[in-house]
Image (cartoon, rainbow, N blue to C red):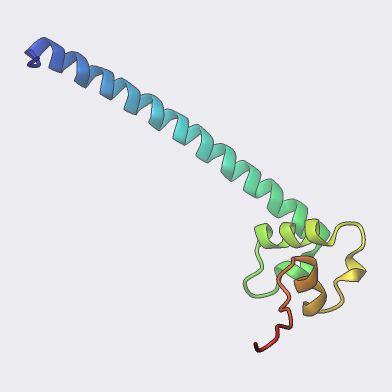
Amino acid sequence: MALTCDALSVALVSLQTALRLLAKRWKALNEALRELDAHLARLTKKAVPRLLDRFGAGPQTAATLLVAAGDTPTRLHSEAALAALCVTSPLQASSG
């Protein structure tokens, strides 16, 4: 079945419409993400301002650590304690 000129123009108009709607959706989601990121930055700055001063620790990382620490941040007294909490601490293995 060959595409006629009319069928091709209908397909192009449909494609253009779909792309326009997709672009509008992307812009709306991008704006929502910016708003949520700004809100997260305000919350983490209020909760742990010293953590945000550390190199490499932004609002996303600070929020993740806050969630991992939960209500008892004193249990994260060392890097080893954090590694154990995140199940990333090394395990001893036999050599053979």
